[in-house]
Length: 129
Ligand code: SF4
Ligand code: SF4
Image (cartoon, rainbow, N blue to C red; front, side):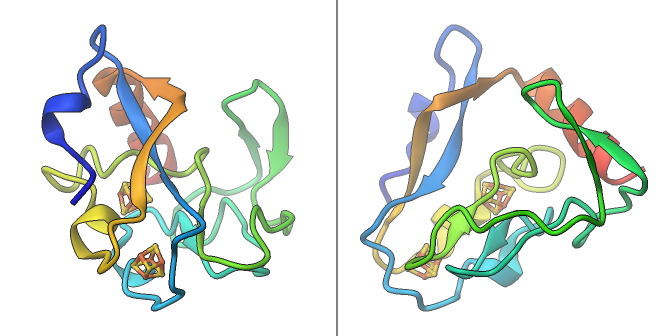
């Protein structure tokens, strides 16, 4: 697996997970995600999918969106991860479940998203009140 627990603690920040274009669309990761943060290419996503979020929800960038409003797919060709919903499995599992089951090791660290364990736990609590 390319996910390496030794690499997640960088200045006490944990890197989010992303799916690369090496994804073979097997679908194995989607049911494993405790936050319903993984979607098939081309599928719309919602904050309310698989969470207890209702009404308006604050995104990582500070903007607010309707939890039930369909959002544009982040990839049309392969499965993708919604970073705003991914907690890197913190609060549920010891390691990212998508990376653990992916047969082609294409669930990898995303250097563009770094959150502390406390921030990820808060995020998890916010989505599963
Ligand atoms: S790391 Fe965990 S929470 Fe994030 S997308 Fe993968 S399975 Fe879902
Ligand atoms: S398990 Fe890996 S190859 Fe299969 S859909 Fe998920 S990211 Fe793609």
